[in-house]
View 1 (tube, rainbow, N blue to C red):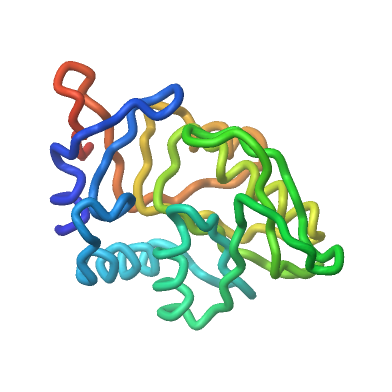
View 2 (view 1 turned 90 degrees about the vertical axis):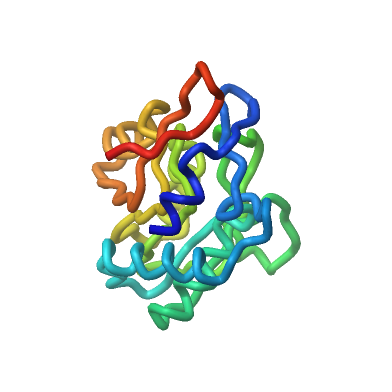
Length: 188
């Protein structure tokens, strides 16, 4: 499958506290082929229920995937941003401490009572997903499910989300980083 090919042997860089893969799916290096994005979206749709009012993603790496899933599932897309602007008090802000970033996320487009499917490209430490779930709850909405394309189980994100919220993260693919070679390894 293409997603496994993209990750098998992908190089890594030090990103804060962890090694992060660099590849076409998450970093567009090389440019993201449409068939890779389509495969990721198809596999995520097959894995999740997407019984929701909206999909929520973060803008940096999740928006590309979120756009494809929004079209495929026929669901509106809400986006968490790394910056704020005045929307008349309808934005929710939450702190975030992820593998890549510490600061604040600003979420727009969620209304009280909404049921959300949260989508992300990768779960590592769980920081982004924890912030997104907290934003949903602060908006008076609820998370129906969390679906990610790639999980880095060594960093414990899935467990943190489950312990804190009782939500099981569904992942299409699991990877680890070979510390000796600095390359990604796809797990069975």
